[in-house]
Each structure stands twice: as structure tokens, then as C-alpha cells.
Length: 339
Length: 207
Image 1: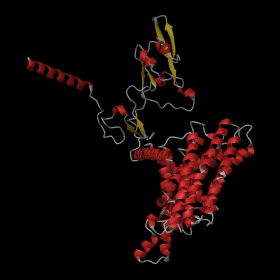
Image 2 (image 1 turned 45 degrees about the vertical axis):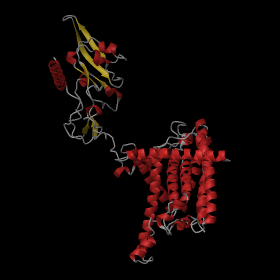
Image 3 (image 1 turned 120 degrees about the vertical axis):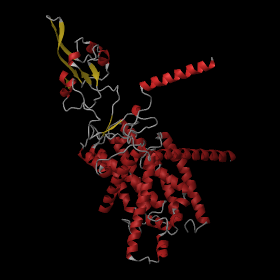
Image 4 (image 1 turned 60 degrees about the vertical axis):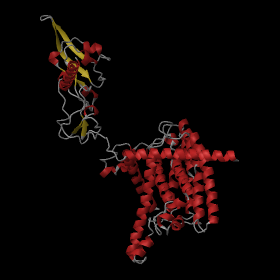
């Protein structure tokens, strides 16, 4: 539990700093520079500022719902870190239904969004909350279908088994080659679940001021802020686990060990492999976070009707077709597509 | 059935086009990352204001004739001209002159219309104070010259766009004493004279 919280917080600090620096580089400016070396204490300064702000509850707002909203949105995201593996023996919990747990937990999010939208006693927040809940619900189904295709190939819901199934052939064994469409669908749906551009209508600064987050300040807003970045890091890690081979190095480590003539059970090799695994996971997650930030500054925001169109009329049929295709290929070529 | 397949084909083509478009956008954004940032890191680097920059107003007490044109032409009638008529010498005597820079909009009307050129604009823009009453400059404060940004040892002065050599867009790392783009007035005269000589030579050859 403590490890999960510490890990998530470190991930958030890193990703907030990365977002500020990469956004600045894309816009030809420098970003945070003097707060800590290379501006790395900037997220800490953000957090401290939010801690010290006055925690306002608006007039005639429902106090219980207002406080519960951010809590319900953030806790499932933190809990989902239990299933993220960094190595064969380096997951906090090896559940048999890990991926299913993540999808179920992410479905709790719309309740919190509706709560905060309604309880703010602000018609714009209400609209923002409704839109956010609609977005969240619409993109869960393509997400689940894309995950289902991967799960069908790996014959197991556990993240460790999914990564295990991709190892052995190095970079050629990663799921992204067997499921290219699924990769794209999962990336788009994950971006929509995280409410990042181009799907950030709920917190579109120009449209609804800040949507369902308008009336929040201080610690509650800090919870939303944290949850947003924790969700981003979690999605990046899950994409790397499901499609990019988790902790696998592009060249299988067993092959390298065999080439060097070292037995696999030597302790120093195991330490090396473990640290290599952690590095690879973090590197892949960083690549996805980088792409997400780059997309944020490239693509314009989609309207609510375009957003729902995309979710229901495009991603859902394509995800279904992908699933059927995977099933057909699994029956036709059991060796390649999971026996 | 065929029509449906055609529609699916068209839709797929549109999707691929959209994906290519997004890819082009991403490559543009990625390309921006390798460029040098254009940030002017104030207060360690400051821009040198241009010649006609409308900064704080400067007042020469001895040149003022208390005509109050600056007050009449100011959009808010801001300058406070305290004068009295001296019956012996039949002249106005200026006692005090002040401008409140908390209210001034730095439009420069007073500078433009002053008949004796006692008002001018400096390049100073750093007028921040802790108390707005400190921004009410009297004639002594108005008469002070600002500290030049090129004299400050803690600051790297950067030139603005108009003062950079031709083709250069970035004031960082400019070699010292680089000339700005364009010719100076003396060089313009030389150029015109050369042109005239060339024309008269051509005419002489024709005739």
C-alpha cells in the first residue's frame, strides 16, 4: 500500500515536470528552470501551493457530495497501481484478474464526476460534469474491447501472464505487431479516459471555464490534479504492459545470457535483468507520456458531438471487428495468436 | 452490399488521411523541439528598448514655460503644473510639476505637443513600487535619467528584432558590434549619388 502510494507520487512528480518541460520545448521556450535543478522541484512547488490554499465550499453546495467527488475520482486510479508489473517478481500484487480490476475501477470515475458537477451549485459545472461522465462512459467500451482482444490472445487476465506471453522473441513478440488496430484504439480510448487533449472538453479552459473542476480550490483541486496525472502515467504503463512487452528488452535477455555463456540463475545477472526490466518499463511509459504531451500541443480539441461520434460510431465498431478478427486468427493459427 | 463496401472503403480512406494529417502536425511540433528557445530570461537578460519606445516621461524644469499644453492634450489631464504669474517680470513662474505614473497611460501626447521640448520619453519601464503614492513623480524624480540596461553588469542586453542583422532572428549569441540590417543615412546618400552618376553616364553614352 505504501509502496503503491510512493510509486504513484513519484510518477506524478516526474510526469508533471516532464509535461512542463516538454510543452515548453514544443513551444520554443524553456519552462521551469530556477526551481530546483532543471526545474525539477516545480511539481513540489505546485503541490505546496495547492496545500496552502483556502479550501472553499460554495454557498448552497451539497457539502458531502462536494467532498466525496474528488475522492471517488482519485482513489480507483491510485488503487490500479497494484497491478502494474515492473518485472517477473516486481508487481505489488499478482492477481488473476488484474486487467479486469483496472477496467472495473476506472468505471467508478463517472460517479465522482457527476457528484462534483452536481454538487457545485453552478450550472456550468453541472454541464461539464455531465459531459465528462458521458465521455468517460463512451470510451470505456472500446477500451475494454481492445483489452479483451489482448486477453484472448494471452489466455489470461493477469498482467504478468500477458507480458510473459510476449517475451521470448524480443521486439518481434510484442503485441503491437499482432494487434496494430487494437493499439491505436487503446491509445485513443486511454487518452479520452484521462481527459487529455484532444479530449479535454470537461476542463476546456475556453469553453466551460474549468467544467466540473471550476468550484474546487486547495486540497480538493490538488486531488483532481494528482488524479489526472496519475491516470496518465497509469495509462502509459498499461499500454506498455499490454502492447509493448512490459519489461522485455528488444533482444530477449535469455539469448544474451546464452551468448555470453552465463547461466540464468547467477545472482548478479538476475539483479541486472531486474533493473533492465524496470528501466525498459519506465522508458516505454516515458515514450507514451511524451507522445501524449506532444499530441496535446498539436491537435485541436474535439466538440462534444464529435467526441461521442468518435467513441460510439467509430471506435466501437472497429474494436468489435478487431475482436472478431483476433478470434478468427486465434482459431486459424493457434501458435502465433495464443493457443 | 457493394454500396456499403464502397462506403466503408471511403471512410477508411478518410481515416487514413486524417491520421496522416495528424502525423504531419506531430512532426511539426517535434521539429520545434530542436530549435533554440526564444525566451528572454529576465532579469538576467533584458531587451534593449527601441529608439521610439514610450517609457517613463522625462521633464526638464528649466525649459518649461508653464503653457499647460501637456495637460490639455493629455487624455486624462494628468500633469499637475503649479505656476503663478509674476507681476513684476510679467512671466509665469513654475513652482512644481508632477506626473502620476500610476495613472499615466504612456501615450506620448504631452511629449508630442510640448512647444519647448522639455518633455521626452525615456526607455525606463521598470517603475514597480510597493506603494502607489511612490509613483507620483515630482519634477526632481522626473528629471532623473534612467539607468541604461547596457551599463548593468548583471544583465546581458539583447537587441530587439529591428536591430538585428539581416536574416538573424535570434538575439542570443549575437557577435558584438554586428550591424543592423539596412543602410545608414550617409550610405543612402552615397548610393543615390552613385545611381545618379550611373544614369548620367548612360545618358552621355547614348547621346
